[in-house]
Length: 267
Image 1 (cartoon, rainbow, N blue to C red):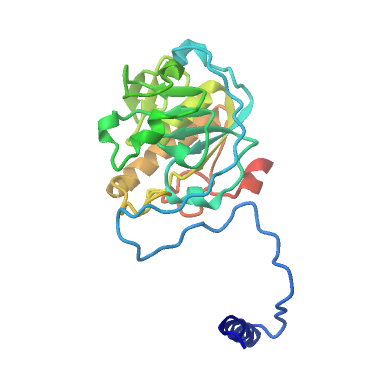
Image 2: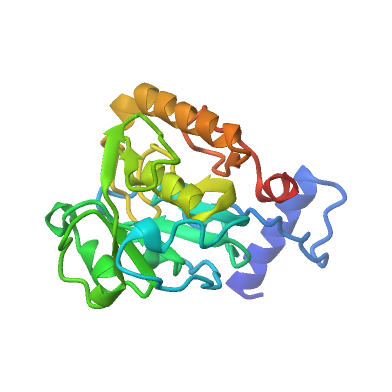
């Protein structure tokens, strides 16, 4: 008997001890739309790159001009948006093709967004992260910087103007208010584009990015204040009839209602 066959018999015996009804020939149950994370390497060294599986998207946006205001305001009225940060909960999803995706930074490691938001100078990106921004294929790249860095498709840049911190003045379309991280600005831009539903994924503030064992989040010490700012943003969005959800099961943000994709679709 081969070693492989012995191992398989041992596995079946163990499964029967755990579950008397175990059938080795049965087919696995259908997987839910929100999957288990692709990567679980708890003891991997800090800085280790992790394998990434592509998430399906369908790009539906168009380049309308060089400025958020007035070129894009209300152009996608009534649409459902997903704000995609770079937290590890991205690994729970495999198909976001029916939503408009507004991503940040090097999100194109895993998906092609309809809109990309980049508000950091390229010199602040480490370990080759800027390469994914530089080669972005998103139809629209929003930035407040005149020249955020060497972007191959710079003709797709659209300028935004930053406003005030923790104001969430949604209808002052000339500016985009901010907090300490870019998904907050992406959510405001989604509203200004015309979103009536906004979900967040990858806005976690937990250890590690979805693509790397990068260690503790640099803003984790500020999570209480940031969560309060997202709470004000939620309040202002809901006053305007916009439905919001935190689609990450591991996010440290508590101010947005947490739900899965099915519940979000039913809102």
